[in-house]
Image (tube, rainbow, N blue to C red):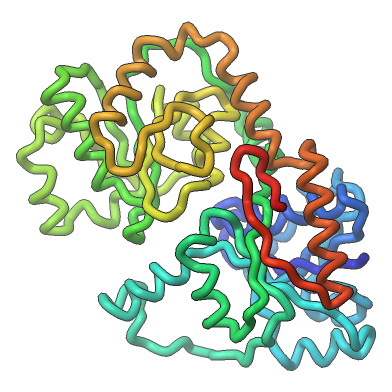
Length: 390
């Protein structure tokens, strides 16, 4: 099949958006599964030339993956279009259907729109009370594919938003290509043994889903009540909230603050933070229990303490809001991580289930595509231990 996947290259870095990564990794999976894949981006004459050039460099070594802008793509006879980075407008669809009236479309959903929209509606978050500058008429997809961490909260919400009842969970995809390209460009290394006393919390702090608030509770418990020794706690992405009154009130009486351990930082690229600054990553989320951050950290050999239930075998897991369990995991990291000689290899073997190495996952995607083009649909069940559907 010839498959188009939309990607949004308007930001300065192609890797600054997890959805872009998902588009590239998915393209690689589908190409490995035997299809020709074209990544479709916005007009190459716009401000995104750096990202376009990076994209072309990344996919140069990928067989059967190419890229082109939207206008060019109107000349291609696609079998399937996957809306991922950019939504497909109805006017565009007329151009695509000139070549194939039976073209099928998929909404590949990655974002937690239920929580994001709730925050926009209830708190005017992210300008939720203001209309967009331009509101295009978007197509109704033939099917909706949902990444596993969004199934619980969003599958039915996606159905409602897209007016499409055919929604199913699909396997999650990842690739080491971003890490490898960035490490080569910047001479970044994998983890080496060291004293473990510098911690990063790398949540974006733009939603209830992923933020530094509960990690502060965990780290305060570790330092104040367990007498744990830390030198530095970097709250990556917390510079946007550091002057918030309630946030300042939360931290001002903590032992962490009084000892000068906390710093509120801008958002930085993961491998740079690991390579230059920290020995361990502490993560927390709610209803987002798979994340590229976890794979990046563990692939490179750093200890990750997290509560992501769809990858319990990665790093050092604690349950939900169990701060005591998180503290125990931190103590385990400090006491034992440097002695775990096989940690990085073991993590990479686990993470391979999300990559092109997982042949059953490739078969899953071929079955999904075959059902799509033949007007069949099934809602599948997800197995997190194998990253496959059945």
